[in-house]
Image 1 (spheres, rainbow, N blue to C red):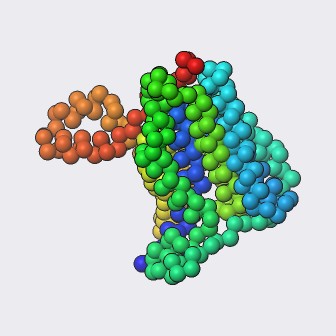
Image 2 (cartoon, one colour; image 1 turned 120 degrees about the vertical axis):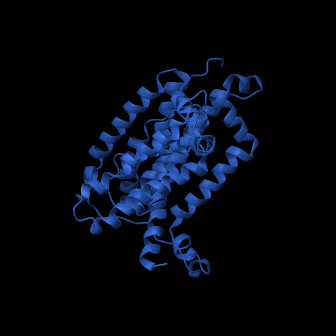
Image 3 (tube, rainbow, N blue to C red; image 1 turned 45 degrees about the vertical axis):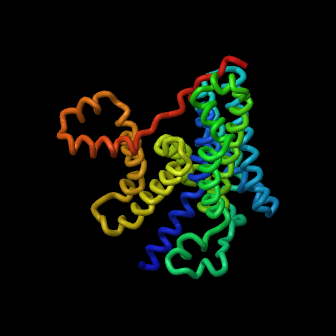
Length: 331
């Protein structure tokens, strides 16, 4: 394989790592029944805060720690308002994302354009020299290795452990879980804060690695939180599928850059924004199998075609947790 393509694909894995953290974090929150729409603002605020702390202290660790703490605190506000006060999760999250975005731009002015520390790559001895695989997977930095580990551990936690079964239960049938001894609201608090911390880590991952530095409104980060939310739906609240969605979106962005010189007649802005409508189209395809008119349409097709199309739609179908966005009243 051409070395340029390999390096580009390795860059896709690196650029997708923050999206993986943010989307998996949101997956934990929504699996428990809580919608956290503050993701976009949280990423912006923690990117600014993490970079500011790292610049002033020289410590990358403190930059990431501050990001995780701020992400958890923002999620705590969402949890308290929606779980304890029974306020609208959508309204609270949307207001918070706007507030965090404006705070990031306002408070980040003093460090805008400054150079700061950047997370170095850490090739793994021996493995980094393996042809193709070594370049793709083993010449990355800690956040990429962390994203690989997060995907595996989160999948095992949700689908292969007893606490994961409890998590699924409080998202699908909280009343039944409560009867069986689960403290539904406490669990929702825990997973919302965990998800917020993971989202909070995504911000410094951009400002201290992927898009090093803080450039305010031209940082290119605004909107990525909404993409993380869309990827959560695309991934059907499954960490493996969510990770695939993050890599797919980042791959589309990379292809836009690669194809730009070959498509001279197409404005560069079109290629830059193309991944966003393509993600919307993908979401439509994921959810189109849930509509009744599709079933009626398929009934008119020949048997072989109907079975093939139905199989594809079933594999893509995504149904949210039954209690998503619904407060639990029995505690």
